[in-house]
Image 1 (tube, helix red, strand yellow):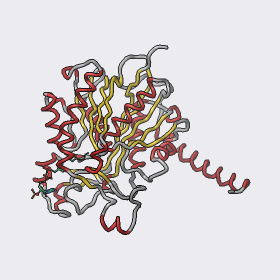
Image 2 (cartoon, rainbow, N blue to C red):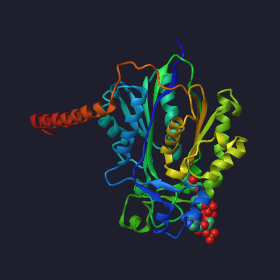
Image 3 (tube, helix red, strand yellow):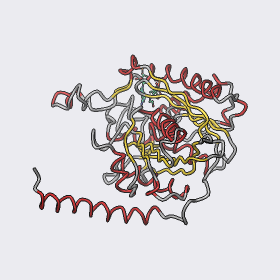
Image 4 (spheres, protein in one colour):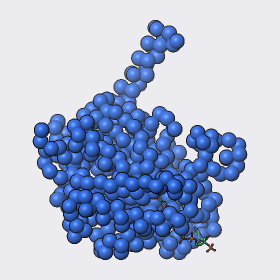
Amino acid sequence: MSPRYAHITGWGMAVPEEILTNDDLAKIVDTSDEWIFSRTGIRERRIANSDQTTASLAVEAAQRALEVASLHPGDLDMIIVSTSTPEFIFPATACIVQDRIGAVKAGAFDLLAACTGFVYAVNLASQAIKSNGSTNALVIGSETLSRFVNWKDRNTCILFGDGAGAFVLQASDEPGGVLSSVLRSDGSGGNLLSVPAGGSRFPVSMQSLYDGLHYIQMNGREVFRFATRVLTEATYETVEAANLTMDDINLLIPHQANQRIIEAAARGLNYPMEKVMVNLDRYGNTSTASIPIAAVEALDQGRLTPGDHTVLVAFGAGLTWGANLIKWTGPLPPTRRKVSPAVYRRFARIRSILARLRRRIEGFIWGNG
Ligand code: UT7
């Protein structure tokens, strides 16, 4: 059997319209635009309104990605939503997305590797495609971190923003696509960045609410030190695994956490900042969504074109870190005539209502027990 390759054939992003600037934050906590910008590179971030959730942003980004790929949602066989801010502990946010976009033949599950999640998910989908386990996969990074931020904690609330980004990965005999990946973790540093309460270890209680343990807790300095080391390591390792050198890399797309971390990584790699994608000034740290959002903007700006090699590299809670090396190709020739995921979304809604109705009627006829 000829080898299969996993190409990125579609991409899309979605961010809330509401902008929260550093000056807005300075009215809430003891901080300033000057402090935030000089320490992080962030100027503003997007905040979800009460109608927007991790799933709704994911659906928007997914729809755009399917449109670029000209792929019918019914042809998807796998949906991975990477998120640290799921709609619920269960069911998986990916199943909500599956229902809303009408991906009737797709398995769907969530993946939690914090800010590294998108890199993990791209690797997982590409491995499934290469081993014949999948043909058309949808990978989404989506977050509503604003719901887990303590807006009284200036150490964390200045950093995070909301948003989503999505890739469609498709099988092809043409060489290219995801060439190599590196995934790493070190659970001994789990306490450095966490949301302690709300899981089985510390279920939500009056005490946990009082102590604010349902909010993001972070040791910023330690995470900073760890990040500068692992971004360089993971990039080198994935480039080496693909038998390439840094000279072959046209664009580096790092996790958008902090301008100083990104610059330190570029210095460590002896790689020019002009070839590094940075857009955190406008979105802050959107965790697992930051890489696909940066990739979509790089494509829109013509900084990533077919034939280019790009490295996606991330670090985050866990601790986790990792990288993917991708030879960019773009959309494959469409398998069906032009599709409009927005139209399918309307069909999906009707299908979902009918499925619920059928369940009720069956329950009525056969009884619920
Ligand atoms: O996706 C992964 C997510 N996490 C990260 O990427 C975090 C990585 N770490 C960082 O980006 C940086 O450590 C921070 C931006 C969080 C903090 O920058 P820093 O240069 O490491 O500052 P610091 O924590 O060492 O704090 C320096 C000072 C402290 O005051 P004292 O103790 O020196 O008097 C802080 O209390 O700055 C103070 N400070 C602030 N001042 C104004 C901390 N936060 C703020 C603030 N505004 N928002």
